Image (cartoon, rainbow, N blue to C red; front, side):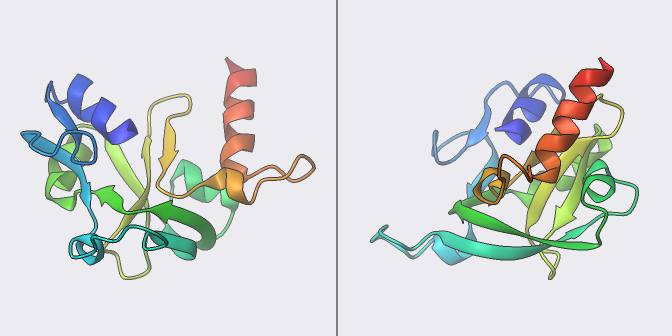
Length: 146
């Protein structure tokens, strides 16, 4: 939804959406994964489980995780539509985390924002009260600074 919001309010693509919500959106900035297009029986067929994510140098995400590659848990069948990558990045939405093969965008952020970081994965799945996920730690630190 962060990508949809950015496309609508920064790029001016008022009708930008995910095809999960509006199949015929003129700006499908989020679309179904290629591997999901032929699946019609939905039970247990999502992209599930832990997957690696390569973090971009100089990103907020890399500073928070302090690693080059992380592993986070997923549960989805829709993804960032890379056809919009160039225009979104030119407008300031940085793709800061990718699948190891570079095909899937896992994290986006706005560099000059106090804390605009969004992930395709679910950081809450591995977060614990005594060991919060790095993305949540970053959010709290950014809030304290404000």
